Image: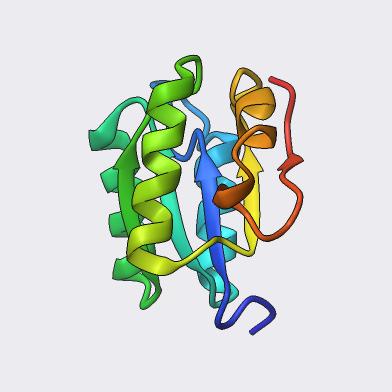
Length: 120
C-alpha cells in the first residue's frame, strides 16, 4: 500500500448531489484504498460521514469532520481536531477551491504542502 501510516486530510470529501461520485469522494476512497487514514472534511457532515463509512466498509480507516471551506475559523477548527486525533496530516488535498488559501495559512494542518486536485 502506497500510503500506509499516512494521514490524508481531504477538504470537500462529501459528494454533492448528482450523478457523479465527485472529486473529493473519489480522492478519499483512493487514499483509503492505498492505506491512508482519511480525514474526510465537508461542509455537509452527513456527506463526509458517508464517504468515511465507505472507506471503513472497505476495510480502511477514516473519520469525518465538518468544516466550511469559505470560513477560516471553521477550517482552523477542523485542522485542530485532525491534529488532536491523528497528528499532523502528511497529505492535504482540497477539491474545494476556497479552502486553498486557508489551508496555506494553517501550517499545523499539514506536514506537507497542500495541493489542489481540482479547480471545479
